[in-house]
Structures are given as structure tokens and as C-alpha cells.
Image (cartoon, rainbow, N blue to C red; front, side):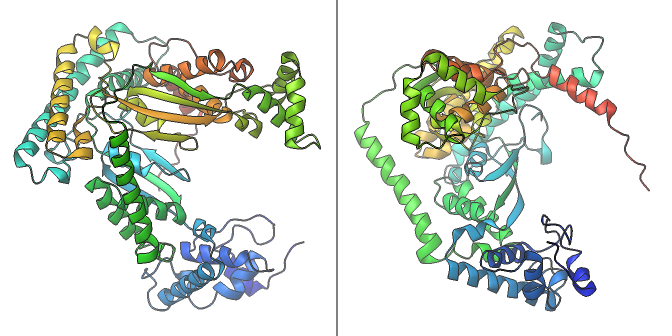
Length: 543
């Protein structure tokens, strides 16, 4: 049924709704608080969204307002504040945290260290992009300084701070000095194919050199992080960051809150309330502190046993039976437990037939089976260099937790470093990094000592994922254009699912896992990009 509007109403609606007649439309050019309040009312009103907008939100100069105190000023500001008041009333009356999911913001957090970037990217319900150490060489010195952070925790230790700067300067200088010689070595090792353009070849060689050298960079290396999230996600982020032991993280929590309150102030009113946000932050801080104390007491004298780089620590032996039962659920009328009994009685071949039908004809890795694959779970303990951890940590829909970065697990040396005769510089940077880390720990700097650690050092973390997420992660991270180190992690996960868990049907469904060895990881990807670039229309002339 098409809703009718007067010409005057259509004029009010047109700038803010992508169409005025169909049942599906988007909202544009409205303050976040207006969109949030509008949707909040929407859930408790029989009116259509466009009618609700006309009746309750389109009065005065609201349409011209862009933010509280925005360019409209005066009446515009008052109109947005009326929307804020409505939002707060709805929020308080309904008591529904989902209302805070109705406003979103694009936020840039620049010059963030690697530990801070990982804290920012901890939340599941947000989108993140981070400056890549694979494609961005860190050989420049903006403002005359290498791109690393000196933590505030060093302020009371001037001599240690001077040693910190000298050590990190040397690491960056080694990186910058070795970048071109390593590219020259790679060019000799992998000559340009006649069919490849200079651009494709240059970008491929540079990516491989950056891959090899990024282990020299310390965790203090600065990066840029772009975030898009809802107000609810930002609220949780700020509360977590306020409880964090690192001063940098707490500083950025205040900076984030200040900027968000310029665009979505009504969504963040609870952060400073003593019995709400402050109490939540206190809870997180105390829980972290007390858990660390209890763990230290119970684990005193216990040392880590040797493990492979990837260990499958937990899985369900009946995983394939349960997935087969779950696959039949939506197309049957039977209860879940009865389907499980049916699946148990099937032969291996019969269960394989069900799973093959459910997986279907996957033409590429983006063709994924449904939620039945979420019926079984794998838990992996991973020990790999910090650079690889940074890449894998971005898979946030699974369950992932990591330990503090240190030097006790040793470091990784890419084979290209030895082949290019650069091992002396590499080992010197690793040794200096370990010495500085230990000095900072002995000075009582705790978590802040992580900043000193080169990214070639290993860190331990676990990843727990269902079979559907395992398919996504393993197929994506084993692609030929991936970093060689995380390709090995993904390939080993795939082998363990098949061989240790015995889930051969599920591992076979992951048909786009790539176990081949690749010399120039980015070459094929750059070739495909170049081919797409050639068929794109030329940019229109600038008038």
C-alpha cells in the first residue's frame, strides 16, 4: 500500500528519504540523534517512519540542523536538543540498550601504537580499518621523528626513556636502511615477467620486502585506525579503555569521548554517571587486577611446556554428527534432540551425503553454507610473531584472547633476511629489543614494557571458532596473496581439523584452502587489480 503525502509533506520528506513511495528506503542528511530518536519511537508507534518524521520531527528548523551547536545555531540547535530530549525519554522509559544501536559514527584514531590499536579493535560489533605494515613502508620521518610512541610511563625514568628512544631509533634506522637493498635482492631473485607492468612488479616486490622487514618494527609503531560503530559499541569501548592499565589507552578514551560527544552526545550520557559508567569501569579494572593476582598466586613456579605453533586444544568428536543434524533442522518438522539421534544412526556415507548437499556447489570462497556449521567448535592455541597476531586478531566474530607481548617465546626470522645477508642487523635489533624490554620490566613498568618489543617476537593467543567461521578464516588467510606466516597458521588449522579432530567431511567442505607454496605472495592479486584498472572508465574531466 502506497502512503499518500501532500505536496508540502513531500517537500519536507524529499531531502531526507531516498524515496517517498516504496516500502524500503534510507535516511540521509539527518543528525544521528534525530535518526536514533526517530527509530526509537518507531518501535512503539503504529505510524510509518515517514509519517512519524512529519508528525514529531519535522517541525521548526530541525531539518537544517546538522549537530548540536552546528552551523545552523539558534533555532536549529534547539530543535536538535528537542530530539535529544525525546531520545533520552525513550531510552529511560523503554530501558532498552538496543536504542543505542541506532546512531553510528565514523571515527579516526591516528598515531595509535600497536597495543592501542588492538584495544580499539577488540569489540565485535564495529568495522575497523588499520594502516597496513605490509603496504605502507615505515622508512619516513614525519616531523623529523620516526613513527613510534614514547609511553607516558617512562616520564619518571629519564635515563631509561633516553635508552628507549635510542633503541627504537636504531630499529627504525635498520628498517629504512635495509628496505631498498632487500628489494634489490628480491628483484634479482624474482625477475620481472614481460607480461607484468612496472607498477604491478614494483608493488609486489615492495610488499614482500615490507612483509620481511616488519618484524624489526617495535610494538610502539604508530598506526592509523578507522572505525565505524554504533553508539552502543562506542560506549562499551570507552568504558573498557578507561579501565586499561596503559596510559595511552586511557588518554585515547578521553579523546574519543570528547569527539563523539560533538556528534552523538545523547547516546553517551551514562559514561560519566557514578552508578552507571563509572561503576562499570571500576568493575572492569578491579576484575582485571584481582584475576591477575589470583593467577600469579596459583601459577607460581609453573613454566610453559613446549608446543607447536598451532595446537588444537579442544573440539567435539561428535562435531560432524551434530552439524549433519543441524543441516536437516530447517527442512524438517522434528525437534533438535530427535534429529541428533537420527544423525547418530546414519552411516558415515549417509552423513557425508547430507553435508555435501548442505554445502552445495561452492564456486568461490564467498559461497558459504548456513548456520548448521556453527554447531561444532574448535579451540586453537597459537604461538606466532606479533605481526601475524595483528592480522589474525581482526577476526572478531570468533572468541579470541591474547597474552601480553614479551620476549620469553623468542622471535621469528623470515628466510629472506638470511638469504639477503641481513641477519647481523636483524639479530642486533632483536637483542636490543629484548634487553630494553627486560630493563623496563625491572623498572616496574609492567604492561608498558610491551612498547619496546619488536614485532618479530612471538605472542601466545587462543582462537575459538565454529566450523563456519573456521571456513571463512582458513580459506581467507591461506590465499596465495596472504602473508606467508599467517598462511602457515591457517594451513595447520585445516590439517588439525581433518586429522586430529577427524572432521574430514567438514575440512573437505573448506575446498578453497590453499596449501601451495608461493614465492611472490602479492603478484597474482596485483595482476588482477591491474586488469580491473584497465577496464575501468577514465575519470571525468575536472570542470
